[in-house]
Figure 1 (cartoon, rainbow, N blue to C red):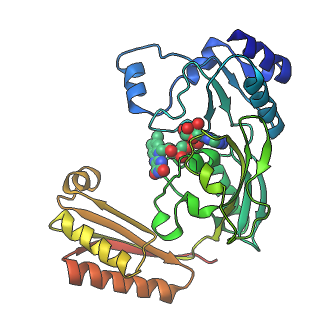
Figure 2 (cartoon, rainbow, N blue to C red; figure 1 turned 180 degrees about the horizontal axis):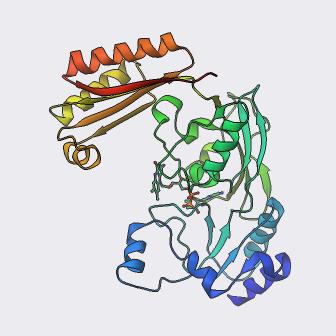
Length: 321
Ligand SMILES: Cc1cc2nc3c(=O)[nH]c(=O)nc-3n(C[C@H](O)[C@H](O)[C@H](O)COP(=O)(O)OP(=O)(O)OC[C@H]3O[C@@H](n4cnc5c(N)ncnc54)[C@H](O)[C@@H]3O)c2cc1C
């Protein structure tokens, strides 16, 4: 097993192949609660990876995979994005870890075609900040792991966010991917970045949700939207959770689509908001005040009139676009 590490060091250099114990320990868990318990409650020393590769370019990744693939040892390779997996997916005991953190550039923001091209190790938070700054754009993908997750990790885990009801999940945003295959070959999965093509099969769907099994996502072209200018938030109490579920069901079936809809059961509503009833937090947003208001009024009819929701407060905000 040491042979492949030596070959990797020869190919990439000492600074890109880390084998020091302290650093390896940092990669010996992700956010999987069982690993956190083993480490922090049972004080276990978790098994470490063999080495961590920190590539600085797609070519480094290609070279590393070629060396590993052509070597005589069978070594698992685990890609490490933000390490925020809650299922142990980025936990790589006994593996070679490829840390994507240095491939973090926002390469192009194309506001005419509403596309952003990014390196896969870029953190969602940083990409979103850049988009907000450059002409008020957004991915509108806000999972709870917003601060940690990387673009590659989000795609590899088919991530969903709080605004996915309106804007879609990550799979709806991916236009094209550059990937490195296990033999080191670098390829884009589509020959152009048009929003939709009818010629298939579309290989990008193999990589979306693949959790690193088929290769490494190195760049992504994603759809972006202008930041919404008008937003209405509101909260409704229900006597039963079922009433809230049915209200949301009717809104979705009749296409009164909220940007955010979170229904808390009595226990969670009590812990988070001090409300002893099931609670719905809902928001509508868009670019025209009258359209947002109309959606809101229709939703209010459905929630209160049809399903017994009791209005518990709200706020409306507008931003100059
Ligand atoms: C507090 C918290 C809240 C969360 N909230 C949400 C949420 O709202 N919605 C949601 O969907 N998830 C959520 N998650 C789960 C997690 O954040 C997501 O799965 C996220 O997409 C992982 O991104 P990452 O960059 O951290 O990936 P990692 O954890 O580093 O990796 C996850 C998997 O993807 C693979 N991978 C990573 N990068 C690449 C790449 N470039 N190419 C190929 N494979 C790759 C890894 O090998 C691993 O199998 C949450 C996690 C935490 C800790």
